[in-house]
Image 1 (cartoon, rainbow, N blue to C red):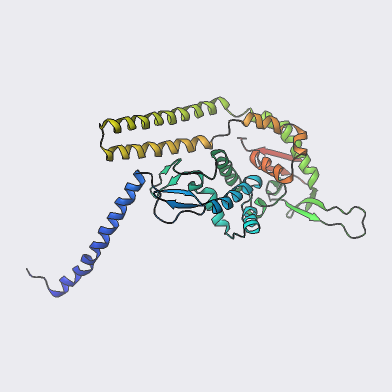
Image 2: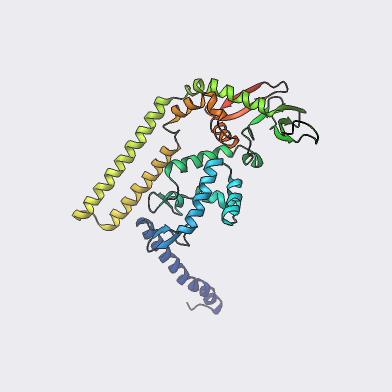
Length: 337
């Protein structure tokens, strides 16, 4: 039953792999224990933070750069503009993909996300409030259906106006009057490249605002607000129940009725479930939706806004604008069936 030299040589790579497998298992166990304890995952701290002991703390200089980036995106809703702003003001050059990762990274919301898909909330100081984070999520979701260049265009109607005949997106074109003309202000119009017609930009914008002021309160009534309120209350009740269970775990720990390993596992599960419920709650329409709609139905309110501010509200509440060669306008709201 002695093995031949060839058979013995086949076992050498397998034996050499055993230490690596043991080291990998030790690392997995160590990372699992860190997750149960709510410690940051392995690797360097994200930009804006530094490691201090077993948690993230703010890096004041880097955190100010991140906050300026977030505030610019929240104000204008354009990722590429925010990236350019960062380079101009702070001489910090990042890619658009990096900027998108910053906007979506749970770390900047005070949470930790692990490789197993679990998220724990409020583990360290946040650079974004929950309201701001929800607004960023809505911005990103809304911009997904808009062409890349239109998403960062400064005009209010950019990426929203389509031709009702061919379905193509209308371009916003600016012309500069020739020299010598008395009226030297630029002229904006919407052009359909397929059907070959152009419409005055200002007239279409005013008609869109008129329809929004007139129709938005009526269309908003189609929302089942009672059902939304019930869903919000149910989620809040589940979150409160989990908070009570966590408090009871602390009492069990002090009384010694549960071992530390079981307590850590149950605490981790409850915190993960609470984070999932809170994320669902934040994805619901904001509680002040009725007040916002009432404000948007006042025509003078729109006249005091800049183009970028108008763009923010139009993209928030409109799904699509359709026009024809005669200038007829039809708007479709985001919550229309």
